[in-house]
Image 1 (tube, rainbow, N blue to C red):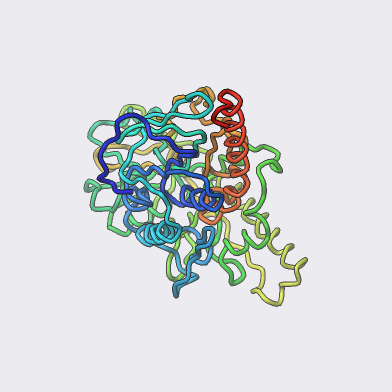
Image 2 (cartoon, rainbow, N blue to C red):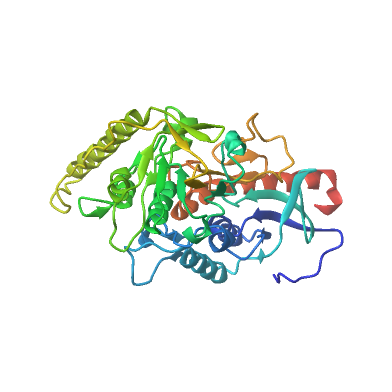
Length: 431
């Protein structure tokens, strides 16, 4: 559909509305089209808008290109072991949208969605829609998560989030405090330090992972050994499993490992988790040594699991020898605070993201504002896609969309059938 189509008067009607034109929305569109179910995909920008406009310039996928696949569409270029840039991901998804002829209405912002009879009314800046089923496929990274006390940072200290940071040239002259030690925080700390700025990294809970292990990409091990296919209902603490940070990885041509030892060796200063701001001082936890020791322990347990799986599969002769990494090195004396202002002129928050469901006008949230769902099913005829560990550990990955869509589609179909029967019962003449 044209992004310049005129505004409608009244509400258009369609069986299913999919909100979001990224990989999840397009995968659902393909599945709906195969069942000949009328639907529309509403996208506030162009297809893959977030990859075009909401990522820092140097970002690359944390998964190798050979893992990038959607139903009927897989990476087929000449660098299967490389890592796509944001622009390349956008091109990959745009190509997919064209291949499946997805009915995407671009440059259409959803303002509100609410219940309407057996279905939903979706208000957009280009008019309203009525649908019987609604799919939330706009991703898990809609808004950055900042601590409440970020407002206590002195006004003369620049603040950027991973949502607004693009390159080091945006930053004020002087030192930079990067907060968060998952993949994003480590990548930004390394990039900013390479620009010549003094960088301090505040480290909380994290997941340490090598880029390669025994000659294969770590994601190969995660996929082949079944880790990425683990289901949420198999976890002892599902909510905890969904909050596990992303592993410390970076995608580079040389498949380099990026961890705290790497950054420390390059000159980045490590401090503990940021706990608050008092006057002009950021206060840090003293638990850095324990946090790092736990991450090292979990890394070795994961590698032990891979080694055991390789032996069971008879693969020891096909992969390299087992290897282990040096423990995270921590300075003997750790600062418990960082002075802001004179030398530390900027803060970059790499403290995670959350989906933006602020437009969803339904009683579907817990007291913390988190969307309530049962493995993706929010309400009759309402499903969500792409949340971390939603159904499987791979649910937030590009290649994870296919399985989740396949398992959630029957819920949509059953709801459409039920509402059709209900309508026929109310209006026999229309049956």
